[in-house]
Image: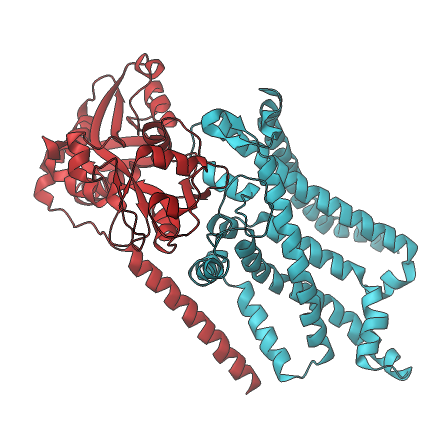
Amino acid sequence: MQETDSILPAASRIPHLCLLGLVIPVFVLIALLFGFLFWFSLPVFYSGGNSIFSGEWQPEQGHFGIIPMIKGSMLLAVLTLCLSFPAAVGISGFCLLHPKHRITSLVHGMVRFMTGIPTVVYGLAALMLLVPLLRTWFTQSSGFGLLACLLALSLLTLPVMIMILENQLRESLNQHQLTGTSLGMSRSEILTHIIIPCAPQAFASAIVLGFGRAVGDTMLPLMLAGNAPQNPESLFDSIRTLTAHIGLVLSTEHGSATYNSLFASGFMLLAISVSLTVITRKLERSYQRRHPQASSSAQP
Amino acid sequence: MILRSSHIISLGLCLSLCSTFITSCQQQQSTTSSSEGKAELGTFEGQSGSINIAGGTAHIPVMQKAAKAIMASHPDIQITIAGGGSGVGAQQAGKGLVDIGNTGRPLKEKELALGLVSHPFAIDGVAIIIHPDNPVGELSSQQVASIYAGTTTNWKDLGGADQAIHLFTRDEASGTRSVFVKKLLKQGTVAQHANVTASNGAMKTAIAGDPGAIGYCSIGYINEMVKAPKLDGIEPSNANCVSGEYPVMRKLYMNTKGNPEGLAKTFIDFICSKEASTYIEASGYIPLHAGN
């Protein structure tokens, strides 16, 4: 007995150590990434007052404000979620309710196919089809702008959200189906009264991933949003996102104020995604504390 | 059967996307470079070593086409080409980090103090472009400045249709933009609501599809897809650029620290020679020697 006691922990420590050996470098790399970005953007934040965080981008006049880009990024991501999240909930709900329906398998095939399409193809298709359409419908606008980018980006975020929602909800639906049916509940009742209230994590992770994709995508804003560094006032206004800004000014000369705005933009992007992740984790944890039963049964 | 139908539909979607892609590609392929004969590369005979090039992004197509031809026929020669912009080109050449630093502008005094020598090889003219259906055939520089400042907002004020003007400009890293702002707008402002495109090609695509649009691009890019109105009565053409009559243009330079030697000299001589003019023309620029 003593021998097995002494050998077992030693043996089980090896995979543990291996994993630790993998995790630590990754952790260090991520910490370094933050450190470098912070280090490079620090002088930008301090030099020349707060010109980086002003609202005007006019390089020829010496104004290098990235506030319009931050606003553009946030607005685009939030509006994209407003459009694609309800659609994703609806589509995944339909697929869960009618697992054997013709349309369901069609939707599954489509979703799987859509996740594999490169964003530049979406961009190209939207450029050739959507932009001319918007231009003829709304004559004041050139077609490029918030709306065009929003529609294309919704299409991009939709399949990811559907997949997450469906995968997570289906598991707990299968678990609770027997119990629910024995209580005389229909499939839709089980879904709306048991599964959905029990699985806020599924929705949270769908939103976080969708938002991350919407805020982080570069190609679609660069191709469709028009890239004017202004504060958007309507859906037809041309906007510039942080990612598109980085893509546009990447090839400027080193050390110029334009070039430095790259680091500030990168830092802002990172800050946005990190704070979003932290907030959702906090929400999840507080939910788990309040409903230990629900969360443990939803995700055993 | 159900699976089949979903496959067929996805396949159909895929095909339609592909066809969109291919047609757009065909539109883009208006200029293709002709392959050069090997005899013209004779000056590189017996030479070996490497050339490092960095700087202006406008130069890259020319450098790449030339480098490809040279390296294909002379395997002992290695040519590396990097971007970075005019500032980077001058800086790195000055520090001796690269053999040739490209700039899309004349050297500044600080850069000349590093001992740099400029070798201009091409002219890049910048012209206003509008949709081919737009009846406006001539613009004055004041009108252009007023359009780009956002003061003039309708084509009917310029003798065109009653249609809103859709402004297009280039990104801040663009040499084309800096020439346009400096030489045509005389350092005037570009309105904040102007759409920004990332390249000459993207600019042309945007203008070609929008009857209300106005933009600008390298003269070499202009074809039947867009229309270039006269500026102050002068046709924006290669000939007028060479004669100096058309003012909105710049020279493209290669810069070396001191006078070039060895392989770098051979390369610069080659780019400046008549043989390399096809590469320069295929990239949308005007070879400098053509006017001489």
